[in-house]
Every structure is written in C-alpha cells, then in structure tokens.
Length: 621
Image (tube, rainbow, N blue to C red; front, side):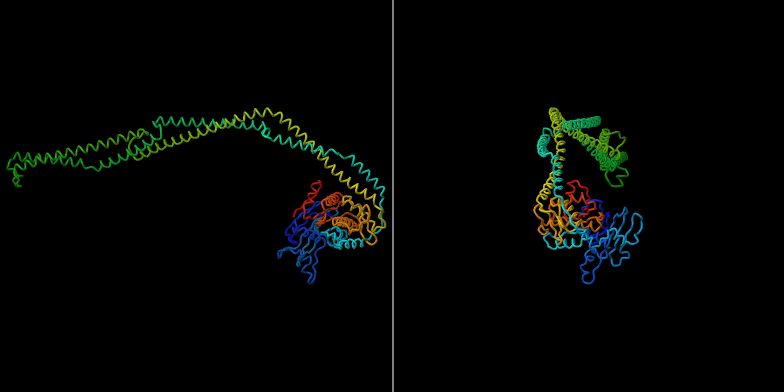
C-alpha cells in the first residue's frame, strides 16, 4: 500500500485541506501547533474510523478533540491509496447524521467496494488499530528516562509469537570489515582538502584583483559607451542644426516685415490701437458737430441784415420798418450794419473751426491707414480689420517667443554637446589604457577559470572522502566492538527480532550499535565492546533508536514479513542529535523500501535530505 493524497473537509483546525504524497520519502514540516498531529490522527481515522465514547468520557474523547472548530462544519474527508496496482479512495463522514459514514471507492474500476470494512482490513495486512498504532504508525516517543517506555518495549516483545536464538560469527565479520576498510583506504585522496584550500585562497586573491578599479571596467563596455556617446552627439548636433535653421527662417520673416525686435511690434500694436481709438473719437465728434449749421445761420443773418440796411438806405426815413417801430433811421442803419458784420465774423469763425476738425479727422485716418499698411493689406478702417491687424501682430510676437525658446534650446544643446565631447574624450583615454592591460586580464581570467574547475572536481573528491571516512569510522567502531565482545548472543528472545531488529539498529545508528539482545525475561540489552548494556542505562537518543528499530521489525513481522504498509513517524526524531539523525534518516531513506511519511516541527530532516542529495517530497503545512 502507498498513500497518494488526502483531502480534509473538516478535521480539527483544518478545513478543505489537501496533501499529496510521493512513493518514497515524504517530510511533512510544520511549526508547533501547525496541525501535524491532526494530520497524523486523520490518516488513522480514515483507516479505522472514530468511535465516540459514552457518558462523561465523551467530553474529552478523540472524536470530540478533533471535531471541526466551526459549528455546523463538515466533519470528515477522504484518503487515496494504491493497492495491488489499483487506486482506491476511503471516504468517511464522522457527523452524527451522516447518511454514508464510510465507503471505499475503486477509482481504477470506477465503482464502490462492496464490503469496504473487510477490504480495508485486507489492505492493512490484518492489523488491528492497536497493532497499527504500535507498529507502522509511530507517534511522538516517550522520554527515554521514563521507565514506562521500557515497560512498553517489554510488553510489546512479550506479545511476539516467534522465539529462538542466534549467534554471531565474529571472525568472519572481522575479516569482512578489514577488507572493507582496506578498500576504503585505497579510495581516499588525502591531499584533496589541502589542495582545495590552497586553490580557494588563490581564487579569492584573483577575484579581488580582477574586481579592482584596474580591471573592473571592461574594454568592450568602454567602447560601447563611447559609441553611444558619439551617436548622442550626432543626434544633438542634428537637433541644433534644425533649431538654427528655424531661428534663421523666423528672423528673416520678421526682418522682411521690418520687425527687428519685440519692442517694435509692441509699439506698433499700441500705435494701432491708440490711432483707432483717436479716430473713432474724432469721427464721433465730427458726427455730433453743428458748426456748419451755425455758420449757415450767421451767413443768412448777415445777408438779411444787408438787405434790410439797403432797404432803409434806399427808402430813407419814410421806410416802413422805422416808421412802424418808431426806431430812428440812423439807428436802424447802424444796427443792421453791425448785425451784418457780426454775423459775417461768426460765420467765418465757425467755418474755420469746422474745417480744422475735418483736417484733424483726415490726419488721424491717414496715420491709421499707414499703420495698418505696415501690418498688412487692408482696404478700409473697420473694427474687423483692426482686430485682424492686432491678431497678425500677436502672431508675430509669438514668433519672437518661439524664436527665443529655440535660441535657449540651442544654447542648452551646445552645453550638452560640449559635456558629451568631454565624456567622449575621457572614454577614448580609458580605451587606450584598457587596451594595455587587456592581455593581462585575459590571463587572469583563464587562471581563475582553471582554478575553479579544479576546485569543483576537488569538492566532489572531498565529499567522497567524507563519506569514506564516515564508513571507515563505522568500521573501526564495529571492529572494536567485535574484538572486545566477551560472548556472543545466545538463547536470545525471538530469532526474528534479534536478527532483523539488530540489522535495523545497525543501520539506524550508522554502525554505532550492531546488535541487540533480548533475554528470556524480555530484558533488552545493547551489545557494546565490553558488555551487554541494559536499555534502561542508555541515553535518550539511543533508547529512541532501539524503539524505532523494534517498531519497524515488529511492523514487518505482523505483516507476515512482507513490506507493504507505509511507516508514519510523528516527531519520532525529536530526541536525536544531528549525528544520530543523519545516520537514521539516511539509512531509512536508502534501506526501507516502504513508503515513509515523517512529520516534524524542524526543517533539519529536509535540510539533511537536501544536503545529502536524497530524493524526497517536502510538504509544508
């Protein structure tokens, strides 16, 4: 059996959670309280279900402990696994009102398994839940100083069905170990580390020299920068020439119109508007003037006075006018003569003033037309023509503004061009200098590449040396143990456990311990070079290693010595130091063919697998 994936609809803190498992080593990482034990328990619950306790015990039983945190949430999920070349899916609903609390689906054939309970029992190799949780499902280990742990080991061993004895062939084992050590010694390269460190020192010195200002800037980079600068200078010169042409064209246009500066246009615009306003004022005054009427009236009055004076002179004293009014003849003559002269004088004055106003209006008109003629061609003095003339003058002012802006841009471009030329000169100087040491840089780079390539090979050799020395240390320890072992293991309990568990403990401890012995009183001993050490006297880490070896051996025993079910470890290596962990985990990864699922609150298991280039699947909660 191999687990493929699981889906949690609701279980403990998880809701709608999915995990995928690989065929070999799986490491499920999560910090404390991340839910590792919840996932661990979910897998067991998928296999064996969750039974509710009765009475007061139901308040703290497993069913209640892992009930989803939200009220009314779905309680259950599914677990997919492969078995005998087919894929299956366990579905469980732990709610009280579940219509289908348990089912197993054959995904390969696309149908439900008719008797899911019996089928699942067969797939689990007949293990009861108690047997499962004491063999292949390895929960968090008890403290090695706790006497109950040793009692648990003894009780478990007491339930084994196979007994017998075994002995060790020390001479044969010693000869084998000597041959292995001889082969490892021949494979060692003792000077690899020294050469590697010497090369590393030289590499750092070369890298420091290459990164110095003398070599940090490459010739290619300088040439590229020089080419970019040259192109930029050409572009800016082209822009400057375009601006100069535009400035000359605008200046010529304004010069042809007689505008040499903005002041000329502004004064002409002011003269135009003032002349037009003066013209309108004089024109309105001329329209309102009655001088011509007064001149005519006074002229007629003078003529009448002459006629009356002539009439009186001709008729004499007997004229009708003087006789009827009682005015004297002489007085009437003088009066009419005076009126005639006065009327002529007033008529002449008024006529003179009128002619003066007409001449002023004419002068204003002539001046205004002359101003308008400087702006453009206009046939009459109208408000529209004055507006057009003003608009024309404003456009000429804008040309002056544009010309001034172009001049400023041209000057700025000149500054930029000079700066770029200075930079180009610096690049040219740098290129000349770089050409001189380019050959030296190439030689340094060749030397650096050669040293790095050599160190890459040496690094692999050093890693191989470490593996060889590790194996040689294990051989030395095993040889010393065999030499000093006072007697072989005789009359040990359980041929299978003494044999298979010893093989497991040797692999898990990396050869630190190569066998264990279980006597007829179910006491567990470690074989050391000098004596058999009771397990109670071993360290916490050693007890954990023995516990792990016995669990694996017992698990296989209860499966009929087949290797079917996956081993699931829940923080099982918490008491292991780095050396024990490396030995145990690498041995398990390379020697346990069953699927492995390791739950851990540390990343060291995953880091170890990565560092040793082992294939594994990392799952992060």
